[in-house]
Length: 89
Length: 153
Image (cartoon, rainbow over all chains, first blue to last red; front, side, top):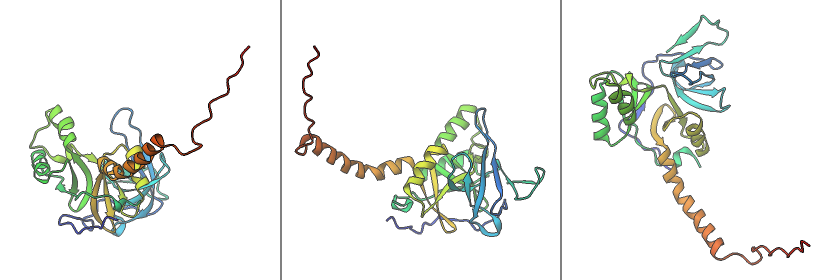
């Protein structure tokens, strides 16, 4: 097994948080080009502090989960929110 | 096999307001082809040498322009405890070429498809040896009995 080596520039993820999510929130990433489809997912785990990223997201199109550091193209629809109450990063 | 069984590449980072020229220099000095882009301390995207060429140079994007103008937004990542099979799935389904690996609250490495191939090459070598041995020295009884001639008349 490969040891996890302490690396000088290992990222500390406890920095400023640009987005807030909770388990159960929906996540939407719009396509950037013609033919690139919108991606939908559900937040199943919040790994950052105070609702910040990374999130474990269960993707609708693959049926499997990955971690995600959302970019500015990502919107979060909070559980129980209306369409007008989405949060962008 | 776990993700951490692979030889992880050291993550190299750049601020989102750095210039494209800064990014190219950092890639050259660090010997990497991809940089994780940070907004403050938070990863927000990844920029590769290919991005600089195809999104930058090819479209006359200024070399003193911000690097986040060329980056791929957002990062699909995996946990260090995830399985190697999960990596292959992400490469297949998410159209990414590099995957950051997260352990607890830190990005501890970056894995490319090349890294996976190199890691599996030793296994493939073992498989090919077994296959070659079976072809050259077939086990008794493995050879199919020739079909009996059929009288077609």
